[in-house]
Length: 171
Image 1 (cartoon, rainbow, N blue to C red):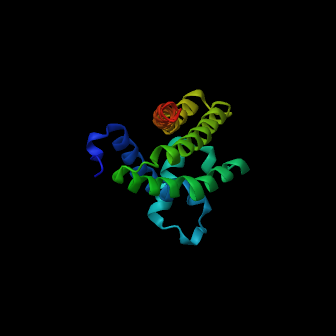
Image 2: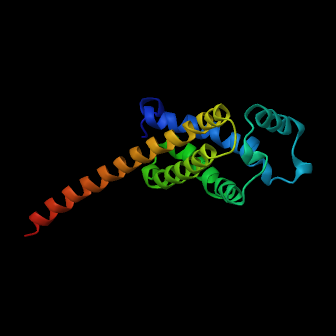
Image 3: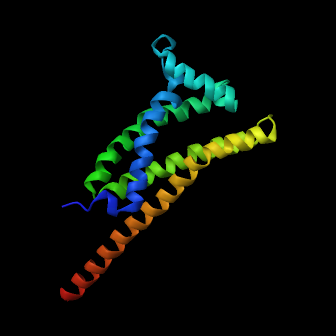
């Protein structure tokens, strides 16, 4: 029987992150991929408010590479997060193996955006505010990647001990 998600604090954090990131991906992040006539007014309102408040150039003058990042979000990140929600609830043994590359991808794409924002021709305070919005979406995946790496290392280390003991018995 799976250990309760409430007793696995890091997994609970990842679950909450996925449960908020997936809807936000479809409501805001991926909106530039939708045919304009299919975007409901309330979603346009959220994006217009976001652009007006933060002047995020990715939603005003989308660079071609940013489109690639959106495609990775649509075809890799969101499906893995959806899988991750169920896997975390089930306490699946595959969680570290699947979430490590996801965490690295999200960290890399988000950190690339932060680095790019730092070099925009915009007022410093505006850039700092926007980088502050992006930073948690870089920091949490970095933490997750370290956690998943250590979980995988633990499995590998324990299997090495077992195989070493088995090898000594067979001599």
